[in-house]
Length: 258
Ligand code: GLP
Picture 1 (cartoon, rainbow, N blue to C red):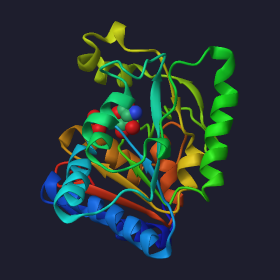
Picture 2 (picture 1 turned 45 degrees about the vertical axis):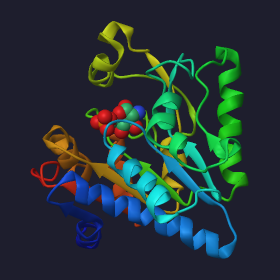
Picture 3 (picture 1 turned 180 degrees about the vertical axis):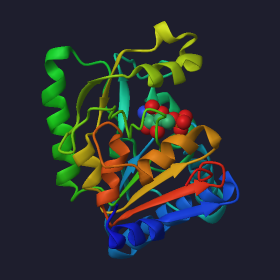
Picture 4 (picture 1 turned 60 degrees about the horizontal axis):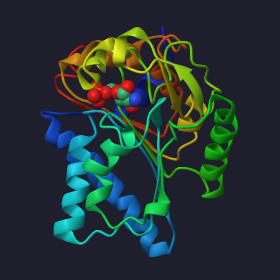
């Protein structure tokens, strides 16, 4: 039996929209508000960003706000959650390509303010690189916002089952379900990389605000486990239940088993 106070605050953290567009517009508006608030203060807005099909609608709306409503991204600094390893940035499946196509190519964000884990490093150089990634986030004062999707394995970023709550940016092995889900992008599961570099659970949990977006019935079962299941490394997204500053933004289909 869960603690009632926790239950109530979790309930308040869940927002269900009738469709994916409503959910995406809500998140994009929240991000725009952070950017504008920081502009008024003369500060950078430090955004943690995600890839996958889920955040595409959010990015589309942010591009619209820039192109049609003059929202500037010049004060925005971004840190992406993850990247496959090994992966060259120019490859079609790289998260660098994804971010350029869906967001960065359409904004006025200075290139040097964009950070995405480097999938081209030699194995020996990875840990020092990951430590530096963490340090850079800290040097900017931490993430103002982290946008998350969720994998059907329960992963956030690429923190697969077994990831610890105090994990930081590091090289990880990808789970079978995750590689299966990526197989279309790569033209077969055996072509999906077996590893990735990802921010850790702790890196994510330290963000000042977290938006977990889940859309479609494909996510209904894992959303039920992530929000209602026991907190455990077996479903890494359950660690978020311990936080006050998380919002779960769902469409009706993803929320259908709650
Ligand atoms: C990948 C990403 C995750 C993302 C997940 C879900 O594994 N590393 O950050 O949340 O896919 O993808 P989709 O949104 O396409 O369902």
